Image (tube, rainbow, N blue to C red):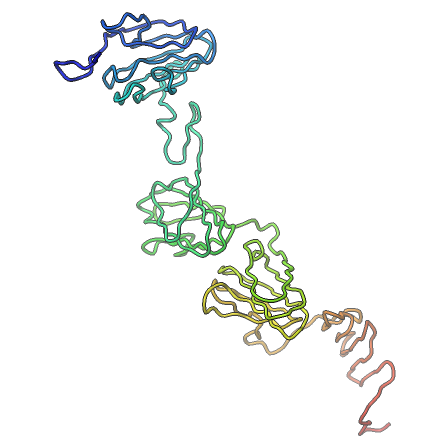
Length: 412
């Protein structure tokens, strides 16, 4: 039969039942009160329900047999929770805990299940439903609002939106950029989270010369993370950076020949040592990240080279001979050797050293070299023993002196 009035074209209004008490002992299907049905379980404007056990269902009538706005206030006066479902128990509308009262109403009657809105009146006082209140950064769990920072991928060139409030943006590629909008468009208290899970630098820029931490841009290196917070006029970060408990770490990497592209974890090591017996020239490719490295070439000298570079095309590289090391600066594209003469320097100061560990010694023989044994003295040690000592009064040689060209001048 049809529930549409032939006179108005609207769904026929059910007969109004103001109040009912319901002893809920089994899943119960409710009906609209009308002259067209002989069913006795009617839905009322106000219903006090006492469930005999937990988990029972109170099923509302078909939504397509009533107009939008049809409503009911359902109060749990018992000691067990129950659920209010759509017609036939297809889906849950609300769960009513002991002592709670909840108000439901039809917002869409195009289907049997329909769409139902709800407001929680609470126990003794009214309160809005948590799911209705949940906005950006909030998640409704049962009747409470909880913090939420859902993750999504950050794409190169992305411009942040107001809807990114409390979101966690994750960068997973090489070098890239993203842009923050005008701070005034977001207001004081907007924030987002950023984590660089990629292999290159993620540069966050601002709009119209606004600042982030006092600068136009902020760089996030691999594994860096921070809260980005809008003050209404600029941006600041909180918790910026990666774990610095162990700021320096070393990588010992065997190489033989060809090109080696470092992983993000390998490139995080400030000290880089390369070992092995080369059978050809070696190129080591680093991520495009602004940083500093100490690189040591401890490979066997077979006449081949070790070159350090980034993946950028046409970038400057640095070649390190076997047995040597260099401090290198990467600007995100090029590698520069930082081992230069200090500007303005006119002298070089050394520690005194000892006969067992001279101030100037050799990596393969640390007890051979030059040191200062005392005031006005410079000495040379071989295998931990002093062989030559140069004093203001002359030279002392320990052991036998041999001169292939003889000795000239002076008195002997």
